Length: 122
Image (tube, rainbow, N blue to C red; front, side, top):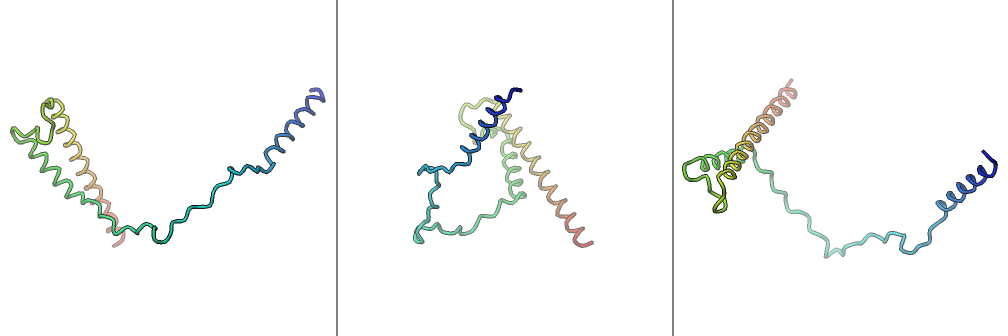
């Protein structure tokens, strides 16, 4: 490689480093100080977070809803008028899948709780 190419590359590298290291005096480049709310406008602490819904209660509600929908002439309950039968069947199928999934989750939670108790008591 010729010496001039090496000198040009070194000069370009030094110039790039100088540009990156130079301080920036752009007024808008600095972040403003954080905004402080006045004491009177401070948000109130949350009262209390609602407890998550009980899985067993949700499962019982879901099973009751499925029982109502599976009764004769009530499959369209909660559906808009003129809903095709295929969509109603899909809705019932999805509710059954949700029921199975929720039952499996509850079963898994109960098994895990039993394992934790057994390990703690051992």
